Image (tube, rainbow over all chains, first blue to last red; front, side, top):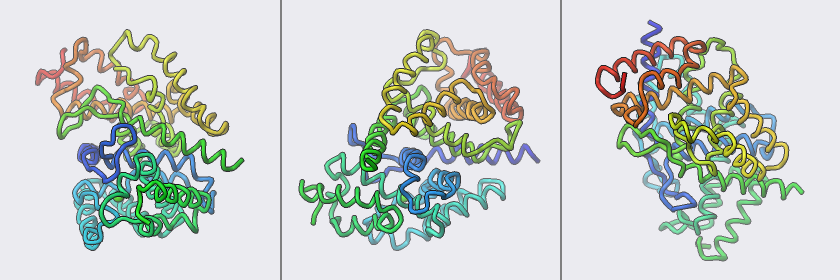
Amino acid sequence: MALERLKKQLEFIVEIDKLKHIFRQNVLIKDRRNENDAEHSWHITLMAMLLKEYYVHPDIDLLKVMKMTIVHDLVEVYAGDTFCYDEEGNMDKVAREKESAKKLFGMLPEDQEQEMWSLWWEFETQQTHEAKFGACLDRLQPLILNSRTEGHTWKKPGVNKEKVLERNAVMKDYAPRLWEYVLQELNIAVEQGYLAE
Amino acid sequence: MALERLKKQLEFIVEIDKLKHIFRQNVLIKDRRNENDAEHSWHITLMAMLLKEYYVHPDIDLLKVMKMTIVHDLVEVYAGDTFCYDEEGNMDKVAREKESAKKLFGMLPEDQEQEMWSLWWEFETQQTHEAKFGACLDRLQPLILNSRTEGHTWKKPGVNKEKVLERNAVMKDYAPRLWEYVLQELNIAVEQGYLAE
Ligand SMILES: [Ca+2]
């Protein structure tokens, strides 16, 4: 019985190795290769430790935040990455990701399956301050990479300053000091021609 | 003043993007490309959430564990990855990594520099149960990948069952159920010719 439990957990750990092959639209600073979801999740989880003080309620539960940021992209193992500015792809994103969550989280023992669902859904729907802070980090990290790679993703068709502002809006109310940084970087990007007005 | 603080934190966040280019000896399951440190750190931090119950003291502080596993390889940004079975490379590993820590953690505001040092050093010297559990995960994860890639790293010169057992020994006393799994996988590997007796 206990053996069956560990076996399930290990098979899940093997399965999520695939997240290292799910590539995002943004690129790494050094050699401009596309970043994958595992790298992105690592980066924002570490950022949670360093930037918590800028959230409007700095007394949020950091463990909850780190659990959410570490698992938030797992469903992309089957559903793939949906570019945040792809309007068509975002129409059925939730349905595709729920299917994926069912299949992936279903590999785990029931209590852990429940925990994964609840962390992922809390993050996805931004119900709590912990989820909202996680969303700030999930937006801020690619913005930092874009600002250091001549706006790699910002040059894609259909992206402009208004859309990037909208994408990052969660910081306006919930992390005003980070929002100031966002505004500053976007102004520089427009000035330098990396982002359409 | 506050501006200076955020600037330091953001420069650190940019600098550690480099960890995604520090490659380890073991490979990913799907396409056998080498894994990098950011991916490895993501994987073991998620494993901490799932496998805590197998540690001899399952009431350890999970937040502390996750903080340590997410930062434990940062010093390799400058020091590089040292193969665990490379005896020569391991002779000056600590000195090289301390130099690297000084340079990298020194980019942060003093309070966060202190926190990074103390998390890294606690992990490195395995002073606490949280660090020992982190070490279990740090050993178990590449073992899982090796067991699914015909013992990729185990076939390297100088590696044999005795050395792999020694490398994983922390699980023997501190996570006996995981240790059983280790023994089982190593026996299979020897049987199938992926690991020298
Ligand atoms: Ca995503």
